[in-house]
Image (cartoon, rainbow, N blue to C red):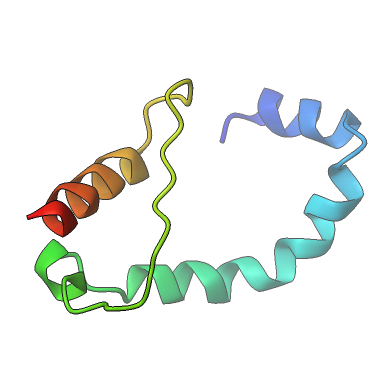
Length: 75
């Protein structure tokens, strides 16, 4: 993240909450990195799952993942 974004975030009212979550980020990122990258690995999930994808959100890698999962689940 560019430094100017961090600077702006530090000025926001949400900064204390964001800063309090920092200690858990490495563990959460490691957990996400350990997940299977193959969409087929998730087809066996049988519980109802809500996939959210914003139409106004900036381009993001998760956009492609959610689209792929959604397409696979409809098959």
